[in-house]
Length: 376
Image 1 (spheres, rainbow, N blue to C red):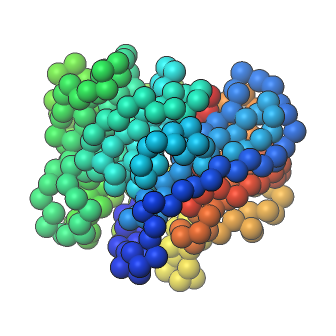
Image 2 (cartoon, rainbow, N blue to C red):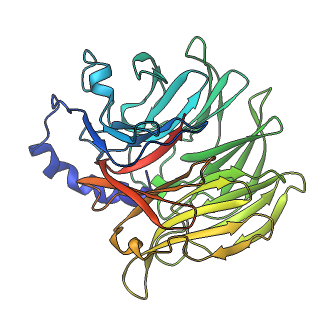
Image 3 (cartoon, rainbow, N blue to C red):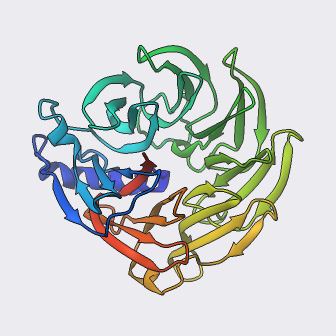
């Protein structure tokens, strides 16, 4: 969850508390949204973050073979689990036969069977953020401390190493303030520290962890308020900076892991991004001090040329219907582009499916703040 949203949502908590229903039961809904398709990718899960403090994180599923989109499947698969999935879903991934949902403010990673969504267990990690996997272990970033906006915030974050068989933490490495995205390349973990709770004293460092020893071996100065990290096949680590939302704008950097230096800076705002082949698909909803409003954008960066090659991958004008672009994913087989719309961050959002030509194929209502997609 972006730190500027934390500031906004905290102010709403008192009002939301008056209408909160901790025991609210979410009923699954099935909607036919497209014709059946058959490929090596059977479908995808979408994790809806839900509003902070409202316990409304939900899980949706789409099946390509039927064209059916099912909202809120976790509750029906796990009727005995109190409060269902939890408070603020922050990441989602499949590893082996298991589905992992990182639930930030519930301080846990929910582990489910990837086929049925039946709960297998829970990993307790305080203020957990993002997850990656490597050789039988999960690596999770954690803010470590509570949700508090304080320029003098003193709690450093960490990366936890989890045994995926026992679901137990086996090692931990302290990094910078409020670590977010992470990537694993050549026996090293690259961690983007944001310092988002320390506004305006944001972090600037990329922590480099030696994987075998779980110790920090280097810290690289990149830019303020780092968030996402993804590595291309050429050793380029693409790192997004959110800026400070006022004077410093969001940007994208390419750090060469072999040369150990920044090799490109791309002036493109990034809210979320996904790498598919040599194309980095980016959605943004950056604030403009010129128009005094949010300005959505849908870009593609070529990682070989290291520049923006498409200013808007939506070609049919339907991007006008999207209010707050938030999440993005690309089907690795069909190259369909999935874009989520958080709308007003309070009510249900929408998911839009575009063909590789940028033409809308279908759309569907989701849960609150649809954000994270993983294919199966």
